[in-house]
Structure formats: C-alpha cells, structure tokens
Image (cartoon, rainbow, N blue to C red):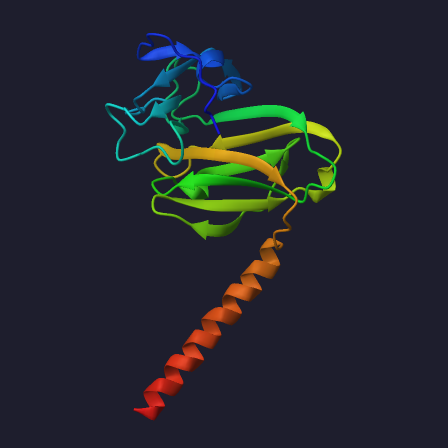
Length: 206
C-alpha cells in the first residue's frame, strides 16, 4: 500500500528504494534509481510517489492512506527510447498457498487500456470489482501461481499519445475468487440485456 516510504526532508526526486521500499522501478527496460515525490510528470516517463500534500498532481489524488504510486509513460528522460517509453514497478514475492486473486486499486484518472499487469511475464486479465469515489478496485486470477515465487509487475504503456497515467494503491493477494474475463463479459452482457428488457417493458406499459 506504499505506506512504508522512508522520507526525511525529501526533495523533488528521492531514492527509489526510500520512496517505494520492496519495489523496483523501470523506465523502459532499465531499472531506475529515483522517484519523483509529491508531483507527477509533465511529459517524461517517470514513477512518482504522491502524498496527501502533493503540490502538483494533475488532478491525481491519493487513493488510500498517506501515499499512492503514479506510473507515467512518456518521453525517456535519458533520450534512449524514441519517441515514448513505458514505466513499470515490480516486486518478487511468494504467492501464498490458497491464494486465488491479486487485487489492487486504480485511480479514476488512470488510463486502464495502457496498464499491463503480469506475473512472471504472463499477462493477467483484469476484472473490475468495486467503484469508489476516486478509484476502482480490480482483481485478477492468480490461483495457478499459488505457492510459487515470482515477479508481479505493473506496466503503464505508451499507447495512444504516449503520455499515460496509472496511479495505484492497496495491492494484495487474496483468497477471493474472481470470475474469468470471459465469464464477466457474459454476466455484464446478461445484465445489460436484462436492463434493456425491463426498460422496454416499461415503455410498453406506458
């Protein structure tokens, strides 16, 4: 949940290990050693940690607690990748036995279509679970990896105009089962059709 940040008299940029302990950050394929603090990028590919006192946040606010992480794809600050590159945070950990899902909160200002979540390089299908005031909870099935150790990675990709945000919080493994994306799509379609049928019947009764 990014609440373990170790920041004493921080500047605009801080050591990555102090801002997001336990996580590694990447700009393109290269690991980064710094994170922006209390502000978000205006065009460069950067990873930020914002607090409730963020001075410039582009309308991006902390989701829960005191801190949230912000991934912004964009122009590579070192000009190695043209025109734009992705950013990612990753953590290698054990998926506890009995785990069925990974769940996380994604801020409402995020560009979901540009977010890629993987475990050991395998893409995870994301299912929306709950909508909050400024975020939405998503879950993905990781039951196949229960009892194994691997890398969980969140990547914001430079699709579209290349400059995309994803801000994250409250990432955890859970024993809750989430539906497969195909099952969710069928359920959503069924609900849509049911709503249309009810609406149509109300028109007829009028």
